[in-house]
Length: 338
Image (cartoon, rainbow, N blue to C red; front, side, top):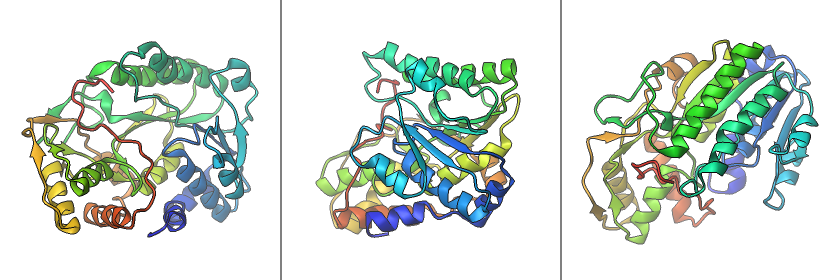
């Protein structure tokens, strides 16, 4: 995976378990928010898995597609593309029918000072989507930010842990979960809520954020000294496979890697690879945003890319000066202001 094409091919390569699950799934799949960080690779993965499953189902990618060429790329990969702003009720009502809905729409950055818009995207819009696709099964992407900061040695909250969102972004994401849960009960819509943190691939993610600072000689902030990360390809697989687990009440799943990752240790590892000195600022606080994904790993197996391999992949990508998405995670933020 030394080029974008090689990376995209690997991200969209379906494992046998996903293909078998797609074979069990009835109906088309519509992906709402298909042009975000996660959407393009998930759509390509779904197209290939459905093709290998031989069901004849369509994968419908819906987004505003504001980046030139993004819609054409997914169309070339075999998806049906619908350019639409689903915040418009008339546009939402006109979307194709589908038995399966993957909801990836969300807003995070710029939330401080723009709270009404964030709530409209993260909480109000899900209610409209749940109404539009009441007869479908829905998998909605959520976030581990719905949990409070927890002790770094605790292993992170399981799905049974009380929620405790910090800041309006996290509260609006919990609002999204509550709205989808209400709709599931009211309209008998099987639903799955996927609490993801933090997906990584060599173009973005926590590892890229750390690697860029190390290579450029900037100090690495240790205040939030630990995090969870998971390979983007595995995250895509789990989201799609969760369609078969959608239920009433909603199926809730933490999606991340098995390790509690030390930011200090990762920075030092990048320093050795790059041959640069690493500087730090701050000290590790006793709490961090963490999740326990034991349930996920029990159902779907462990991620196919271990942490050490993800670090090496990220370092090689940056050393080769391959393109980055330029979308920092801001995982260091502790007050919920993004």
